[in-house]
Image 1 (cartoon, helix red, strand yellow):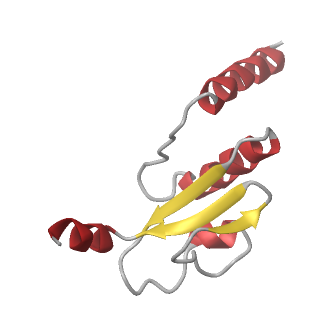
Image 2 (cartoon, rainbow, N blue to C red; image 1 turned 180 degrees about the vertical axis):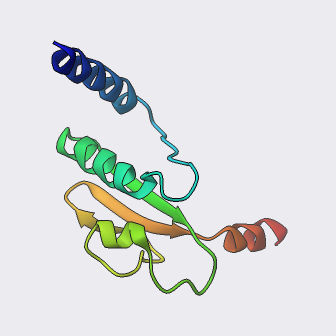
Length: 102
C-alpha cells in the first residue's frame, strides 16, 4: 500500500517539475545532486522536453562528476548533446562578469 502511494506521489512531483521552465538542483556535497540532475534531465528528454544542463565552473577545472554521469570526462565549454534531447555545457561566471563590464 505504501509503495503505491509513494509511486503516485513521486509521479505527481515529477509531473509538477516537468511543467517548469527552469530547475536548479542545489545542496551540500554528497547528497545526490549529480545523480538527480542526470536522472531528471534524461527523464524530461524522454518525455519530449529539450533539456540544457549547465554546470557552474571555475576556469581550468579538468574533470566533472556531472560529465561522468553522462559518459564524458569534462563538460564542454559550448553546449553539446550528450543524449537525445539533453545538452550539457559549462557556465563560467567570470565570462559573464567580463561581458558585463565591457
